[in-house]
Image (cartoon, rainbow, N blue to C red):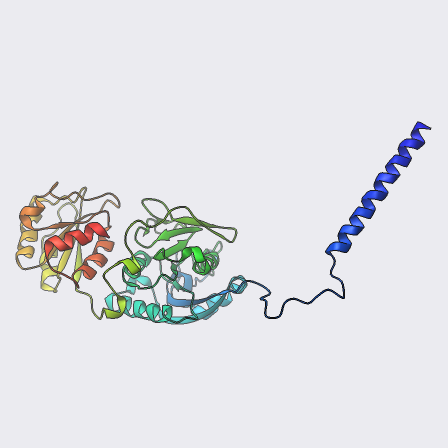
Length: 374
């Protein structure tokens, strides 16, 4: 009897659960007489409109075999084909491609930098453009990103992206990098953060990022870490850029037609002073001396640099170490020689900043303030 009582109790519980499930399904299932969706209501959130500008580089490269990850020809695949190879992008944004250059980024010069910047600025002014992605070779991606970070006058997201392997290679990184870049450019959280660089699931500020390895996909590093990550389709920010950029700077790409010549002279044991003389003869308005250590200058290089300064050429002590701040009046009497020092800018980035600074002033004290500010 107890057994039958337990069975009856179980049956009642199962029946009750079945009825409850049926009611729940009935409540969730749409009925034929249900009211239609409100007229004009969007079926999904509006996708961002992103323009992808192609400039070439490894992300547009191709190798002879799938195992060619470091030996290949760059800048051969047009941007429209690169976009078509990542159909998942269409799920997150409305994109269109535009080919501005088809070059390796080692071929970027001042003229091409200005042309790219002006086109990006023109697109950002269009109300139907929500953000820009620039496919770019990795060799000078950090210089372009820093330049745009200082000269664009818009808070819309601008993302520079590249790859370390061509699309034909096993383990190619370009497709995911491009997807992530579009995701970041589409995110409202990316507004107002300046020009960004997105590679290897990381989001970097254009000011800090630099290439640190010739072939590894994790080559891009920032001395203070990335701003955030891209994880499973999510844009995650953890910190903000601290230095002025875009809307906060005194440079406007639309008002720049030419950049002054700034040379970088690399220091090493037995460096030839003739390199300084050559820069002066070729019209350099400033020389960034990529010195050893904390901007150290060999005794036999002091006089050539002083002579260049006497001719009106600005001298900037930088460091070839890849990190750290160059201290004024430490290794050299900068006040006495009327020289400048970088803050923590790498020589190649100090060149960009000095070229822009010289469009505003040639006063040493004001130039030093600019180097410390940005």
